[in-house]
Image (tube, rainbow, N blue to C red; front, side, top):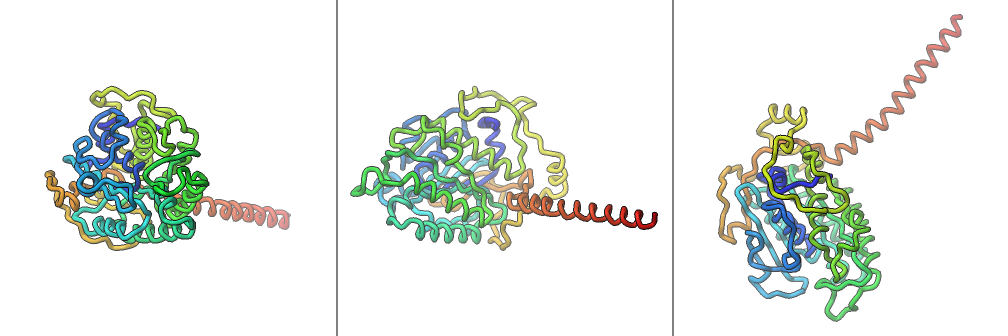
Length: 379
């Protein structure tokens, strides 16, 4: 897996509207991505721990947080947004996979002036800790409603990546634990793994992408913070690289084959201008597609079969600076330089190929047998 630098992440997400939804872990995902879009450095400990601040690395707090009362209740709200000339990243804090508030967010995404290009989402720990003990039935019902609505609301060109919940320690503490509940809920580690199974299965059933963070970080306890839930800056940078590599693969973007990293980010590369070898080159078939259909912005993926509302195709570079207007705005979305084949289509193609091969082989074998039989009879 290559280690992408800031200027390469800027190219990958050029003119893209990215939406991240989830708890404090996903807020750190948002922060690391916003930081990586601007410079090659890691988050500080204070940046990881802070929540609801009015500004983080040139982003703005649109709603909730320190604009209101800070608390650890299920109705806590925090909506953040980073906006530059060619990038827009927005974060919504969630305490439940599906709720009236999530429905309001989906309404904004559906009827906003611009459609999202990438949605990254997870909701798990709050669901397991704050809404009763019968999480299996309730969580599954919420997931079914959530993915059904996402399937209806998101346009065909949007890539949705469901992050599984990251592994937690045996002893945990955090704002998601009930104030009058046990300090360390029993079976929470096992419940997280079971919830990941349910959410991944439902996402795959609906044709969405899954990034299994629980698998990638299962042996990385040394990068987990003392609360047993959150992770340090190097873990989050590794998470960002995993996410960006997944997105690039889904969009058909060939990543630069330089500076590969192992399991963890060892050193932060120094800032420098990209040389000729670092420049991204589309594959030959991508070049043909760009020439043949330069105006196409939508993926040919069969994942969705629905009509999305018309969105503005304005190419204005200046985005609204007011918090009220920015809630429903995003940068202009030019045509994507690469088309992609969705995981569902790739899997269907593989299944068709694998199922057709034995049939052809059998037909050839039968044909040869008939020829030898006829020849033997003639002789």
